[in-house]
Amino acid sequence: MSEHHFAVLVDGENISPRFLGPILAEINRTGEIILTRVYGDWTEPHMGGWKELLQRYPVRPVQQFRYGQNATDGALIMDAIEIVSTNRNPVNAFCVVSSDSDYYSLALRLREHGMYVTGIGRQGTKSILVRSCNRFIYLENLAFTGSAKITEESSPEDVSVEDIVCTAYDASDEDNDGWLLLAHLGQAIRREYPDFDPRSYNYTNLLDIVRSYPEMFEVRSNEKTPPVYWMRPIRKADDNSKLTGVIKRYMTNYGFIRGEKGDYFFTKANLPAEQRDTHLKPGTPVEFIQIKAPDVKGESSAERNGRARNVVVLKG
Image 1: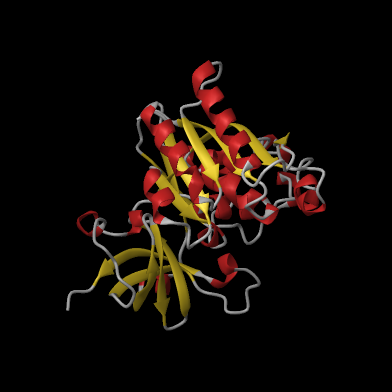
Image 2 (image 1 turned 45 degrees about the vertical axis):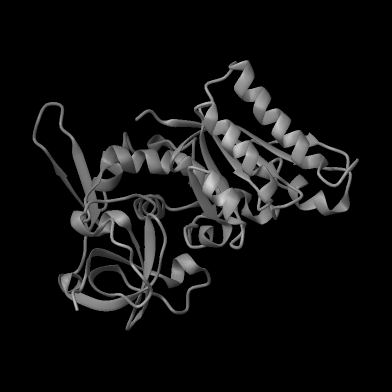
């Protein structure tokens, strides 16, 4: 399946600007963002928060005076149809950011034109909009996936290279033994930092970076020419002991376990293949291996949550 090339259209009257960073990071995980537009009446004081972000993100503001109750909706919808009709760009997917269910007809129309549609909005968004999208992401869930160590204002040089590697690893889907393709690690880093360059840290390439921290990461290859490399964090001997807990919540591709030491984040890839289509209800007992211990004193959700792998549903 070819990669999605997104047009991200944000209803700035309907969404808080504090979510822009997590929204763009989420879409970058599933494809390439071609354009991002934020719609609203930029002459109004309540758009001040959005104005502060224009120098930080490659976003085009679209002015729409409040001539009527749904003026912003109409401008966003017309632009979406124009993008589809002109075919002057490689867009094959849309992300519509709003909790307004009036956009359901736009989502359906875009899908009729062969577009992949992701919706992003608050929990409680009416099901007609949710079901009209190929995928719908709740804003409240984005708070769990943000980086604990790398802030929106940071550049690669502001953060230690080992923190960048660890954060990119945590944002990726490693296999059940914790191995991640080095190429996928590089993609995850560049989604967060398009200007990331190992030479900024006096390294030749990403492999050199990972190998320079033998106490933190291990590397293996398929010993072919040219070789393919995998990496994973090194765990202490007692890290492979199995823990038990219960499902706290589970979305389509990731979830959280409530354990004795705190909550643990895991992805669908951390489940056995035969259990990945299982509907995991809250309270479902599971067994897992701890990758990262929870930190109850952490300031953010990402810091407080641990990380689990080899998650297995326990049979009653």
